[in-house]
Length: 393
Image 1: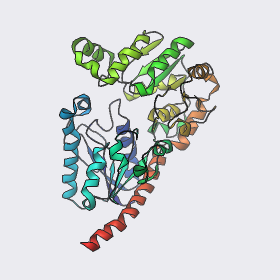
Image 2: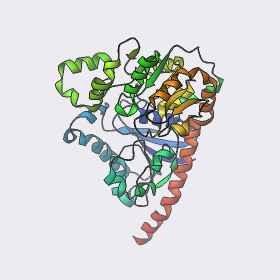
Image 3: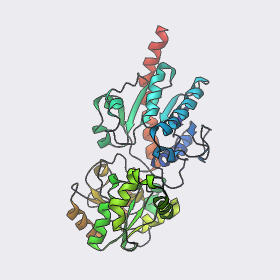
Image 4: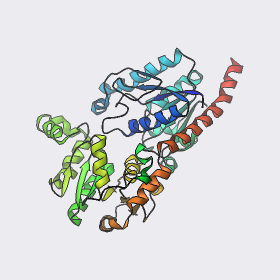
C-alpha cells in the first residue's frame, strides 16, 4: 500500500518503552509491520524513542509520564504542546494521507477542531470509555475522524455518539506470538504472576489473598504509580508525604502491601523485556482478577504467546481472548472461591494450546492487516466529505 501515515504515540513514554508502556508497545509492534507492507510512517513521539520510522518528530526529548501525577494546572501543557507541534507539522505539508492517533482525549479533540484542515484520522481507543462522558457523549468526528476499539466488549460500552464513529475493533498483538507454536517452552516453576501496573482495577490485592489462601507463590511485576522499583517507592514513602495522594500508591499501601511478605507474595517492580518474558514463561499461570472491564489485554496475549495459561474473572475482553478450558479458566466476577479452584486446577491447561492460539490470532502481522483495512475504510469515508468541502469553497 502506497500511503504516508502520521502515527501519534503521544509524549508520555518512548517507543518502544523500556518496561511499562502498553500503548507504546502496541505502536512499536505495529509500525515495522506497516513499513514492511509499503506504508511510510511519520512518528510523533519523544526524542528518546528508538523505533525505526521514515520520519520522527517531537517536542520533548524525555518521557513526560511523571507529569501525569502532577496537579492538572501543571501537567496540562504536555499533551497540548505535543499536539501543537503536530498541527504545525500538518499545516506545513500536504503529503500525510492519514493520521493514526493514540493520544487519549486531547488527540481527537484537536483533530476534530481542525475540521477539513486535518487529514483523515483513525483514533484508537485504548482505555475505559466510561471516562470523559462529556467528550464522548457529544462526539462529532466532523466526517474526518473515526475510531476503533481494541475489543468488541469495549465498544459495546461506548456512548452512542462515540460508537456511531466506530469502524470496528482490532485485538492487540505481540511480537512474541510470531511462530510461538514452534517454541518448546521450559518446565513451569511453582508460582503464578500478575503482570501490569499495580492499580485497583487489576485486582492485585485479590491475587495476593489467593496466594496465601491456596499456598501458591505469587509474583507481582509492574510499577506503582511512577515508581518502577521497590527501593524507589520505599524512599518516596519515607521522604515525601504527598505521595500518598497518588491513588495507585494509596492502593498499594492499603490493599496490597500488607500481603507482600517477600516469600509467598513478592513484588519485583518493573522488569525489562527479557526479564519479564522469562518470568512469564516459567509461571504456571497469569492471574487477572479484574475489577474493571479491561479493554484490550496486552498482558493476556503476551502470556498466551509465552505458553502461560490465563485465569481470571469473566469480564472485559477476557472472553474474547481466551478459550475456556484450553488456554484459560474464567469465573464470575468476584468469585474468589472459583478463582481459587481454577488456581488449583491450572495444570489441566495446555501451554501448547496457548502458544498455538497466539500464533494464529495475536501476531503483529494479523494486527497490521486489520489496521490497513481500517485505514482504507477511513479514507473512503472521508473522501466524500473532502469533495463536498472543496466544491463549496
